Image 1 (cartoon, helix red, strand yellow):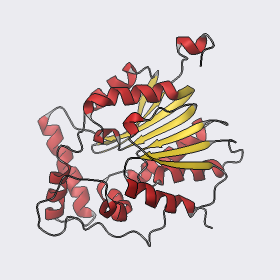
Image 2 (cartoon, rainbow, N blue to C red):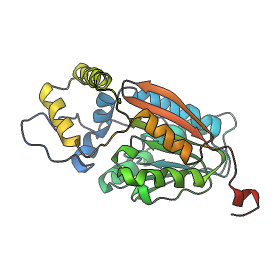
Image 3 (tube, rainbow, N blue to C red):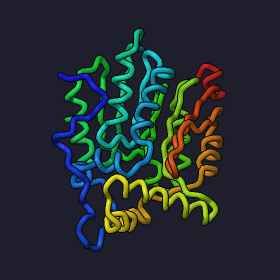
Image 4 (cartoon, rainbow, N blue to C red):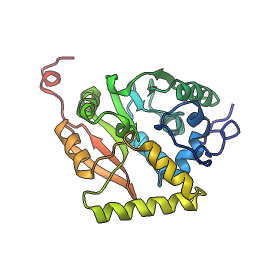
Amino acid sequence: MPDSRELPDPCHGRDDLYREPHSPAAFRFDAAVAAVFPDMISRSVPGYRFNLELVAAIARRYVRPSSRVYDLGCSLGAMTLSIRSALAAMVDPPSAVELIGVDNSPAMIERARAQLGAFQSPYRTDLVCADVAEVEPHQASMVVLGYTLQFVAPEARAAVIGRIHDGLLPGGVLVLAEKVHEPQAAAEALMTDLHHDFKRTNGYSELEIAAKRQALENVLRSETVEAHEARLRAAGFDEVVMLSRHYGFCLWLARRCRKTTAEADGGP
């Protein structure tokens, strides 16, 4: 079997879900989206391919032996595959690492199992269909939350970040990638225009851009950079650094350095 970070493309189509005029329903990660998702995300999210490589580089630096790596909102498993391949290719790869991908879309999980099963790996990989808002990571050296928190109810986001922090080993990291919005209207309008230009360059029509935006309204609820960073620090992350920004799409590394009082006292 092949061993590559690139997902095979033959079973995926081109994203033309919004090509024909119609009243789009609210966006859902259903079978239709899963069938075109690699094309959709690469043509819609600036910096996506760069961030896949960045996540691999972070994994090589921070994943520890006998620990877990969580990919929360794993979709078709591209982040999981990038991490798994990067670790296996190291001169001295970490041993006994378990990777866990979680997504609440049965269609995504079904395709992710097929995709990841096409590649050899020395690492155990489990894919779970579940709500990421209810996952409690444990013994984790790395957690990826890639373009996922923006689909979680705003009132539940602090608890999600808090559970991730508490489930990380000291020295462990959270990689958070999100679409953000600007607090000033003029800056937000500029970011929106640049993002739409990016989509046009990648072959989306004006109709498709408008329909997709309407479908995502009240489904993808973005926040400001300041709101994300304040939440990460409030959860207890000692180091928070933005490693990547492409227009309104950001990626942060948040590192837990200190033990909790219970851990320092020898508790679980």
